Amino acid sequence: MEIIVCPTPEEVGRRAADSVLAALPDDRDPVLGLATGSSPLGLYRELGRAVSEGRADFSSAYGFALDEYVGLPPGHPQGYHQVLLREVSETVGLPPDRLNVPDGSGRTLAELTAGARAYEERIRTVGGVDVQILGIGANGHLGFNEPGSALTSRTRVKRLAARTRTDNARFFETIEDVPTHCVTQGLGTILDARRLVLVATGSAKAHAIAAAAEGPLTASVPASILQWHADTVLVLDEDAAQLLTNRQYYDDAAEGLG
Image 1 (cartoon, rainbow, N blue to C red):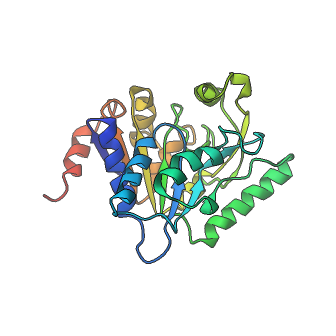
Image 2: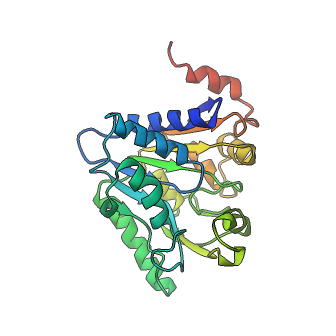
């Protein structure tokens, strides 16, 4: 695991974008795993800057969202398909017809489960995810894999934790409008990506970051599976990194061989 601590959120976005770009293939269409929320916005802006400067091209890329709410009507502005159209497709030039989002429109568990299986198959069809971009929940969730999620889980229907709904209520008129369920990539699905790049800023994420990076591997902290991946990069600001006990080593390691 590589941990990079930056002095400002703006630098977090730049360093995280560099980590994404460095892992994209140049001999085939790249495949990005996409997170929503406020944490990766700076990263997406920096990827857009790279495109405008001719350092990157996502016109033939595929994008796969981590998750989607269950039960929102088509075109709802807080549905993650619409969010990613605004925050990623319009920013980096990823074609809308190559943006894939789990299907949360099913009316029954059987329909939702069938859609989740189809989503896994779409990821396999394009050769898997090259770089999975991640945020982290204050309770340690990845995607919508809440505490207690199986470490080998695949894309499936999950109930959202009360804390997650409360955290996401800022995007809706009232908390009653926040869906109670979602379809999310599983932790095992996330681990299949060739590189994981997690972005976190702010002191509200400090406990989750410390538990994920330095605590035991446990379903109680889903993000602790980052320790199990061979190519994981955490890009943090000072506030998010404040509870890391091995900080000096991470800073020394980030200097490289020089």
